[in-house]
Amino acid sequence: MAYTDLREFIEALEKHGELQRISIEVDPVLEITEFADRAVKQGGPALLFENPKGSRVPVLINAFASMRRMELALEVSSVEEIAARISDLLQLEAPQGLLGKLKMLPKLAELGSFFPRTVSGGPCKEVIRSEGFSLFEFPILHCWPQDAGRFITLPLVFSKNPDTGKRNCGMYRMQVFDERTTGMHWQTHKQGAEHYRRLLAEGRPRMDVAVAIGADPATMFSAVLPLPPDLDEMLFAGFLRGAPVEMVRCETSDLEVPAQAEIVLEGYLELGELRTEGPFGDHTGFYSLEDDYPVFHVTCITQRRDPIYAATLVGPPPMEDFYMGKTIERIFLPLLRLHLPEIRDIAMPAEGIFHNLVLVAIRKSYPGHARKVMHALWGLGQAMFSKCIVVVDEDVDVQNVREVAWKALNNIDPQRDIEFSLGPIDSLDHSSRLPNYGSKMGVDATRKWREEGFTRPWPDVIRMSPHVQRRVDELWKQAGLP
Ligand SMILES: Cc1cc2nc3c(=O)[nH]c(=O)nc-3n(C[C@H](O)[C@H](O)[C@H](O)COP(=O)(O)O)c2cc1C
Ligand SMILES: [Mn+2]
Image 1 (cartoon, rainbow, N blue to C red):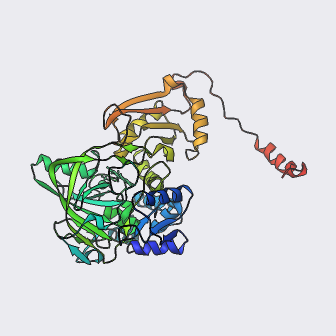
Image 2: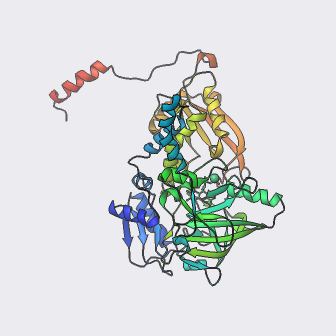
Image 3: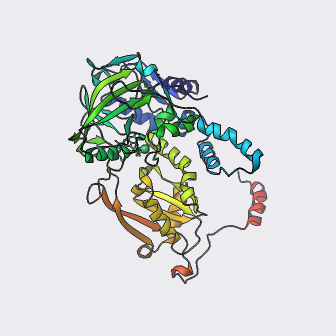
């Protein structure tokens, strides 16, 4: 049964020993960070601060900060189950005959049940205020010492594509400027920024935006997913939950937000209005520097009577976002293989902060195949950000970084096997020559072929003969070894 809301998820975390309630007073300015950082690095539980300094609203943090908690969030015993469900869906075959068609019906009905459902009300409307509110009522974190202020770190930002009318939901941090104004840190490649650009080009004065904070875990997680433009994150959330997300109309715009949300901020952006945002201690483990971003004016807050404020902390890896990223890596593999079936597996080690280091194992079939895969990834959605792609043969386990390093470094002639490319770069990259633009590197660490101009013999990896291994299995104990 899908979790209805954040509370049911918190109960589940607690039941499985994955949540620690903290009743002492802790300051959302820096102190919660130090708790959350230590907890995630020690493999500790999610934390629910019941008495944050300066607010009556509790703070939940690290709710997704381990694979076990990701499994609880998505109600699976392994996130591979979701990958398998996606593979299944993709293998829908044209039904044969009437019987085949009848057999398809349950599957189609299931698909139909994932679409979000509009409802007329919900808990996020228990308290509605269009005046007399302040964002400072909420225990919004000041995460790191050099941060420019308090940042909303786990917001679900809703906007609409003006051309297609399709909804988007992305997670973009929001710096609190004052009681009713924040930054809107959607980077230039993201869907919110695209909607903004289109409205600006049309000469429209304003853009409606709504932000939900705290919802059922699948809905929250879906805001992070690198879905294609115009594919509704709420539909994907419905697929993940196995039940539709209930959406309710905003008070001040025709956007919809999850009815079960804890807190909803409704408002608008004045198109063309920009303000300095940052610095902010970021995913990369470095501060992202200040830059100009749009300004979000909050006109109305709707919320539960007793809301819970959901937050996350990013910083030197691994943090909570690593486990979200790992889950994305696992569940998107079948979708990636739809375009690139030669990909056997893919891994993004924590130290590479998602896209700085992408390890790919392929079944190599023709000369130059590794380079084709690099360019395909650089051309595929948010995989465009991949800074260093290492392509290995399918016998290399890319989940084992040490094996990749060992084999890849043996296999390369650097001058021959490194491919440089220019293109878009993640906005958080502090090293690129220009913001959002710079170079990427692909390393072809596959075994080189004669057809690729390599005429020397290629050695085998050293392996003991199986029969000797079996014999030594027997002799081992006799030799008195443990
Ligand atoms: C905790 C967290 C914070 C994030 N903050 C931002 C952000 O401030 N700006 C941004 O553009 N992307 C941010 N992201 C990444 C986006 O959420 C992600 O790229 C998402 O796929 C964007 O959705 P979209 O394609 O619908 O725009 C963040 C991700 C996480 C997990
Ligand atoms: Mn999207």
